Amino acid sequence: MTESLVSLADFEARLPEPLTANERRRCELLLQDASDLVREEVAPVAVPEPPPLVVRQLVMDLAGRVLTNPRGITTENIGDYSYSLARSAINGMALMPAEREALYRCLGLQYVASVPMQSGPAGETVRQATPTGWADGEQVTWGW
Image (cartoon, rainbow, N blue to C red):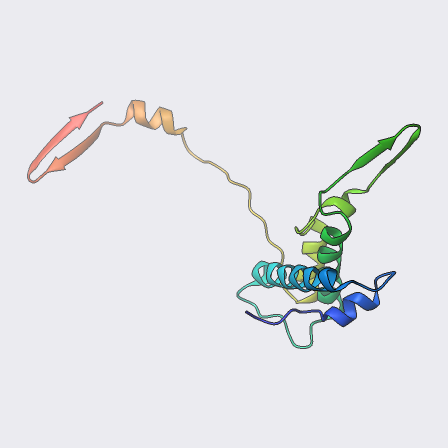
Protein backbone atom coordinates (compact mmCIF):
# COMPACT_ATOMS: atom_id res chain seq x y z
CA MET A 1 0.00 0.00 0.00
CA THR A 2 1.35 3.42 -0.92
CA GLU A 3 1.60 6.22 1.58
CA SER A 4 -1.23 8.73 1.96
CA LEU A 5 -0.65 12.07 0.22
CA VAL A 6 -1.66 13.89 3.44
CA SER A 7 -0.53 13.01 6.95
CA LEU A 8 -3.06 12.44 9.66
CA ALA A 9 -1.40 15.22 11.70
CA ASP A 10 -1.93 17.74 8.85
CA PHE A 11 -5.56 16.70 8.49
CA GLU A 12 -6.26 16.72 12.23
CA ALA A 13 -4.68 20.18 12.62
CA ARG A 14 -7.40 21.57 10.35
CA LEU A 15 -10.28 20.02 12.28
CA PRO A 16 -12.16 22.04 14.92
CA GLU A 17 -11.51 19.50 17.72
CA PRO A 18 -9.10 16.62 18.38
CA LEU A 19 -9.96 13.14 17.14
CA THR A 20 -10.61 10.13 19.31
CA ALA A 21 -8.58 6.94 18.79
CA ASN A 22 -11.39 5.38 16.68
CA GLU A 23 -11.78 8.55 14.63
CA ARG A 24 -8.03 8.68 14.03
CA ARG A 25 -8.02 5.17 12.52
CA ARG A 26 -11.04 6.03 10.37
CA CYS A 27 -9.40 9.27 9.19
CA GLU A 28 -6.22 7.40 8.26
CA LEU A 29 -8.30 5.09 6.07
CA LEU A 30 -10.27 7.96 4.54
CA LEU A 31 -7.05 9.82 3.71
CA GLN A 32 -5.62 6.67 2.16
CA ASP A 33 -8.81 6.11 0.11
CA ALA A 34 -8.79 9.72 -1.08
CA SER A 35 -5.08 9.48 -1.96
CA ASP A 36 -5.68 6.29 -3.93
CA LEU A 37 -8.58 7.90 -5.77
CA VAL A 38 -6.43 10.90 -6.76
CA ARG A 39 -3.57 8.65 -7.89
CA GLU A 40 -5.94 6.51 -9.99
CA GLU A 41 -7.46 9.61 -11.55
CA VAL A 42 -4.13 10.85 -12.91
CA ALA A 43 -2.51 7.45 -13.62
CA PRO A 44 -0.13 6.70 -15.25
CA VAL A 45 1.25 10.11 -14.21
CA ALA A 46 2.76 10.00 -10.72
CA VAL A 47 1.90 12.64 -8.15
CA PRO A 48 5.16 14.44 -7.31
CA GLU A 49 6.73 14.38 -3.84
CA PRO A 50 5.93 16.44 -1.92
CA PRO A 51 2.38 16.68 -3.32
CA PRO A 52 1.33 20.14 -4.53
CA LEU A 53 -1.01 22.17 -2.33
CA VAL A 54 -3.97 21.55 -4.66
CA VAL A 55 -3.50 17.77 -4.41
CA ARG A 56 -3.25 17.88 -0.62
CA GLN A 57 -6.33 20.09 -0.38
CA LEU A 58 -8.35 17.76 -2.64
CA VAL A 59 -7.39 14.73 -0.55
CA MET A 60 -8.43 16.54 2.64
CA ASP A 61 -11.69 17.72 1.04
CA LEU A 62 -12.58 14.20 -0.10
CA ALA A 63 -11.82 12.66 3.28
CA GLY A 64 -13.51 15.52 5.13
CA ARG A 65 -16.76 15.17 3.19
CA VAL A 66 -17.06 11.51 4.12
CA LEU A 67 -15.97 12.18 7.71
CA THR A 68 -18.50 14.94 8.35
CA ASN A 69 -21.38 13.54 6.30
CA PRO A 70 -20.94 9.75 6.03
CA ARG A 71 -24.54 9.10 4.96
CA GLY A 72 -24.62 11.85 2.33
CA ILE A 73 -27.58 13.67 3.89
CA THR A 74 -28.66 16.61 1.76
CA THR A 75 -31.47 18.14 3.84
CA GLU A 76 -32.85 17.72 7.31
CA ASN A 77 -36.06 19.02 8.89
CA ILE A 78 -36.89 19.10 12.57
CA GLY A 79 -40.16 20.93 13.21
CA ASP A 80 -39.82 24.45 11.83
CA TYR A 81 -36.03 24.13 11.58
CA SER A 82 -34.47 22.90 8.35
CA TYR A 83 -31.14 23.08 6.62
CA SER A 84 -29.59 21.79 3.44
CA LEU A 85 -26.04 21.20 2.34
CA ALA A 86 -24.43 22.36 -0.88
CA ARG A 87 -23.51 19.72 -3.45
CA SER A 88 -19.84 20.18 -2.61
CA ALA A 89 -20.58 18.96 0.92
CA ILE A 90 -22.40 15.78 -0.15
CA ASN A 91 -20.41 14.49 -3.08
CA GLY A 92 -18.62 12.02 -0.83
CA MET A 93 -15.52 10.20 -2.05
CA ALA A 94 -15.77 11.33 -5.66
CA LEU A 95 -14.15 14.20 -7.49
CA MET A 96 -16.48 16.89 -8.73
CA PRO A 97 -15.80 18.26 -12.23
CA ALA A 98 -14.19 21.45 -10.88
CA GLU A 99 -11.96 19.41 -8.55
CA ARG A 100 -10.94 17.10 -11.38
CA GLU A 101 -10.08 20.10 -13.55
CA ALA A 102 -8.02 21.69 -10.74
CA LEU A 103 -6.17 18.41 -10.18
CA TYR A 104 -5.29 18.06 -13.85
CA ARG A 105 -4.26 21.71 -14.15
CA CYS A 106 -1.95 21.59 -11.09
CA LEU A 107 -0.19 18.49 -12.47
CA GLY A 108 0.14 20.02 -15.95
CA LEU A 109 -2.25 17.52 -17.54
CA GLN A 110 -4.80 18.24 -20.22
CA TYR A 111 -8.36 17.34 -19.27
CA VAL A 112 -9.95 15.78 -22.34
CA ALA A 113 -13.43 14.36 -22.74
CA SER A 114 -15.03 12.70 -25.72
CA VAL A 115 -18.53 12.53 -27.05
CA PRO A 116 -19.60 9.35 -28.85
CA MET A 117 -20.56 10.15 -32.44
CA GLN A 118 -21.79 8.07 -35.31
CA SER A 119 -21.21 8.71 -38.99
CA GLY A 120 -22.62 6.91 -41.96
CA PRO A 121 -25.85 4.95 -42.05
CA ALA A 122 -27.39 3.66 -38.84
CA GLY A 123 -26.48 0.10 -37.90
CA GLU A 124 -29.99 -1.20 -38.60
CA THR A 125 -29.94 0.27 -42.12
CA VAL A 126 -26.62 -1.44 -42.84
CA ARG A 127 -27.98 -4.77 -41.59
CA GLN A 128 -31.04 -4.47 -43.85
CA ALA A 129 -29.07 -3.48 -46.97
CA THR A 130 -25.94 -5.60 -46.61
CA PRO A 131 -25.92 -9.37 -46.95
CA THR A 132 -24.25 -11.20 -44.13
CA GLY A 133 -22.57 -14.52 -44.34
CA TRP A 134 -20.38 -16.97 -42.56
CA ALA A 135 -17.73 -19.30 -43.83
CA ASP A 136 -17.39 -22.99 -43.13
CA GLY A 137 -14.14 -23.98 -44.81
CA GLU A 138 -14.59 -23.27 -48.54
CA GLN A 139 -18.41 -23.03 -48.25
CA VAL A 140 -19.89 -19.51 -47.69
CA THR A 141 -23.51 -19.22 -46.60
CA TRP A 142 -25.22 -15.87 -47.19
CA GLY A 143 -28.17 -14.58 -45.21
CA TRP A 144 -30.24 -11.41 -45.40
